[in-house]
Length: 266
Image (cartoon, rainbow, N blue to C red; front, side, top):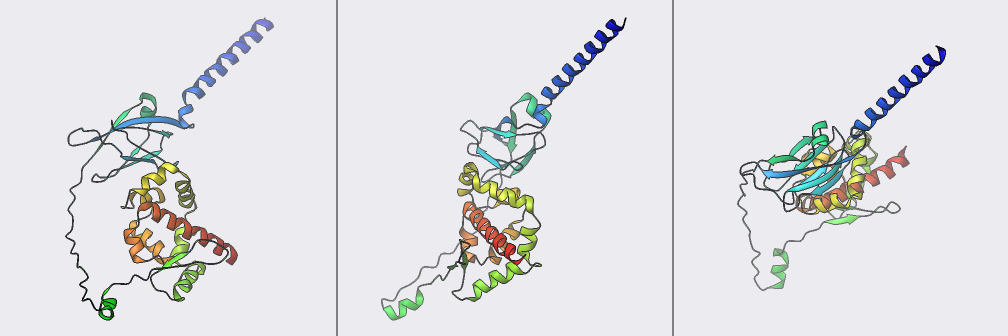
C-alpha cells in the first residue's frame, strides 16, 4: 500500500512538472524577443508602402519595409512599434499576444495633406565693385568651441568667448534646462546611446528632417530638442537645417560633455 501511494505521488509530481514546463514554453514569447512581421499599406487605397521607417521604441531597433510593404523586427509583448513615412501620419502600435501568435498583420497609414509654404529667394545683386560687394555678401559666423580634455565641441552663432561661458554656466547650474532633461531622464539617455549604436536607426535618421523619430524614442517635444541644442550653443541655422542623424549626434555629444562636467562638479 505504501509503495502504491509513493508511486502515485511521484506520478502526480511528474505530470505537474511536465505541465509547468509546457506552460513555460508556451509563454516564452512573453519574456523572450521574437521576430514579428507585418505589411504596411496606404489606408485610402491599400497600396503597399515601401521604405516606411519601423522602430521598436522599447529596444530601440529599426528597419524599413521592403518593396512589398513587408517588415520584420524583433519584439516582445507590450513593446511599442513606431511607424513613420513622409507625407503620412505617424502611428504607434502595441505588440499583442495575438500578433505574436498569428504572425503577420496589416498596418494602414493615413496620408496627410501637405501644403508647402511660399519661399521667396532674394538673390544677392553684385555691383562689380569689390568694396561695395564685400558688404552685400552675407557672412555666416557659426563657429565651434572645443573644451580641452573632453572631446567634441559646441557650435556658437557668435565668435565670442561668451558662447563657451554660456554652455559652462548652463551645465553647472543644477536648476537649468539641461539638468532637467539629462539628469532626470536616465532611461531616455540610455536609449540615446542605443540609437547611436544601431546602424539601422542611423540609416533611418539620415534621410529624415522632421525630428519625429527622435521625439518618439526620447519622449521629447520638438521644442525641447531645439532648446537642448540652443543651450549647447548650436547655431540656429544648424538646428533648422540639420538632418535627424546630425541632431542625434549633436544631442549625444552635448549629453556626454554634460556627464563629464557634471561628474567633476559632484
